[in-house]
Each structure stands twice: as structure tokens, then as C-alpha cells.
Amino acid sequence: MSTYKFLMTTVIATMVALLYVSQQTALVHLSYDIKAKDKMYSDLLDRNKVLLYNVRQLESPARLERTLLAKQMKLEVPSRERVILASSGAEETGVKNITRTAGFFGKIRQTTASLFALGPEAQANLAK
Image (cartoon, rainbow, N blue to C red):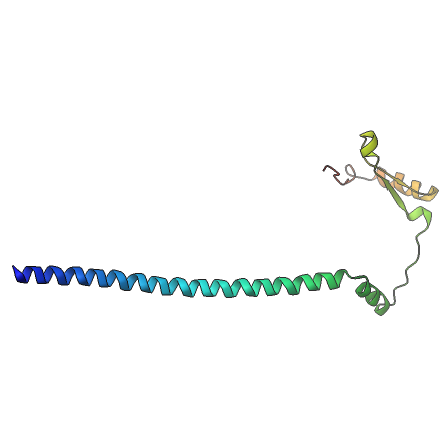
């Protein structure tokens, strides 16, 4: 009987030890995973900061001015015929937004373009 108790105690102690070791190895694996994900998270945050900085630089008026000067582009104020006026009377009257062209030649250009249009014009949705 004492041999049976000894064997049962040994088997139970071995099972408990194996369970403990398996839990500890699982904890170590999880800690490595957490550490890797934390590093990836901090790398993504750093990359996000760099990308936001780049976006701000690309959108800055100073960069646009440098680019235009470097390419020696000549800019001029457009004539009345090349200006399209967009009025948003939808708030007051409930009517769709109306786009119209300034100047006589602009109206001719708009009429000609509407003849060859395949569908309705694209309009921005101002729903709030």
C-alpha cells in the first residue's frame, strides 16, 4: 500500500509540475508576443508622426511657392470667361446648388460642354 501511495503522490506531483511548467512557458511566449506588438505599435506611432509631418510639409504654402519658383511657372489671374461661379442657395431656398459661368464666352463653353455631357454634373452633397 505504501508503494501505491508513493506512486500516486509521484504521479500527482509530476502532473502538477508539468502543468506549472507549461503555464510558465505560455507566460514567457505571451510576454514575447506583447513585447513584439508593443515595439510594432511604437514603430507605427513614429511612422505616423513622420507621415503627418510630411503631409503638413507637402500642403504648406511655402513648399508650393518653392516648387512653383523652381519650375519657373508663370501664374496669372484667369479671365472672366474661365471662372465658374458656384452658389449654394440650397440653405435658403431648398433648391439644388447652381453652378454658372461668368462672361459671355464662359456661358458658350458651358453650353457646349452640356451638349456633350454623358450624365448629370457631379455635385457636392451638403447634407449635415
